[in-house]
Amino acid sequence: MGTVEFTADNFVEKTSGEGITFIDFWADWCGPCKRFAPVYERAAEANPDITFGKVDTEAQQELAAMFQIQSIPTIMAIRDDVVVYSEPGAMPDAAFTDLIKKVREIDPERLKAAKTEHEEHAHKAS
Image (cartoon, rainbow, N blue to C red; front, side, top):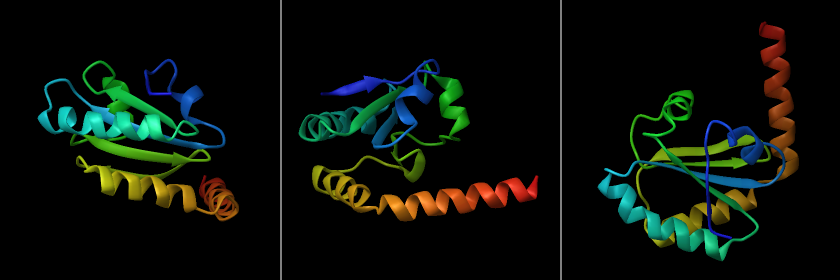
């Protein structure tokens, strides 16, 4: 399937709902971003059931600010509308493959329960 360019216009549509989404926050001037790009592309091709998006932090500054991206590349994983991973730094193939495996192994029922509990606490606090 390859990667999808995420923008402010399509971000919510592409990342909300059930399923797994990975996001690569990058910029054209970033050397580590360019070195990580082939790793990310290979993972996208090998995992067609997962959405792999890219956010150009120069063109999409509002998205980068929304997620407080301080260093790039930053890799984020969203599972069933919940951010389950967000860390800066490029990864070698093996490490990124391991991350994908771990995100796949997250129990969706536990994730839903944790999300519901978080929303209930947030509602009580307001």
